[in-house]
Image 1 (spheres, helix red, strand yellow):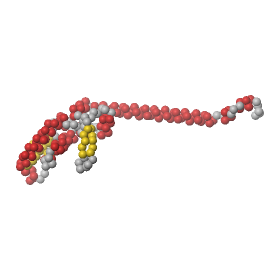
Image 2 (tube, rainbow, N blue to C red):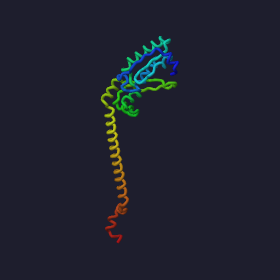
Image 3 (tube, rainbow, N blue to C red):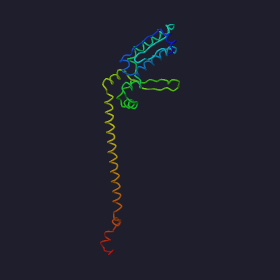
Image 4 (cartoon, rainbow, N blue to C red):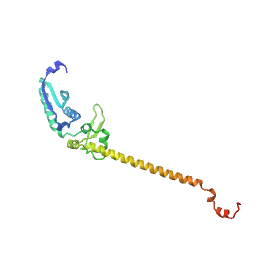
Amino acid sequence: MAKHEKSDIELIKTWTLSAAITMGSSVRAKGLLQEIQARLPATSKKAISLEGVDLVLAMPADEEPAFNAAVSVASKTVEEAPSLPVIPREIQDILGMKTSERHRWLADGRLLSAGTRTVRLAGRARQITFHVFDPKVVEDLLDRGVIDEWRVEDAEAKAEKRAKAAYQRKVTRLAKKKKQTKKADKATVDPASSLQGWDDFDLDGLLR
């Protein structure tokens, strides 16, 4: 910001985001900033910024009515923050999970959804729908450190699946080999032995 612009700013309000709000996640903190900006009028959106764990609202002195209105909006949002749903990118940062893990654990029921939210992408007509999560559930998962347990479970299940697949391949190979052996044995049998009446013919000594 230019020096002359700084001199115009006289109205400042700061909110320090607690661990109950951010859960140690800078992504969650940024999400709260974006939530506040979404609730502010267009003329006030850029007046609030995130500096570490502090939300800072700064406006010129001659914009006191707009400043007071923005303070009200920001204060209410910060107050609601601990109960605001956790969105995908936030839960991934808080729990240190990959997108593929989030999808897998959602699908198998280990990660509980608190519902879905539909938003329109900025500057686009297309909408996207995604799952959101209860902050209390996320905090509990974080406190219990279950992500490591889930990864161990997944690794064990993957190893078991791999072992079963290997066993099935072995069974299939043995069955195929057995079939080929039978076919080979059948091909080496004396063709005369399968002819009707051959034994009697041979006993009569007609070939001697």
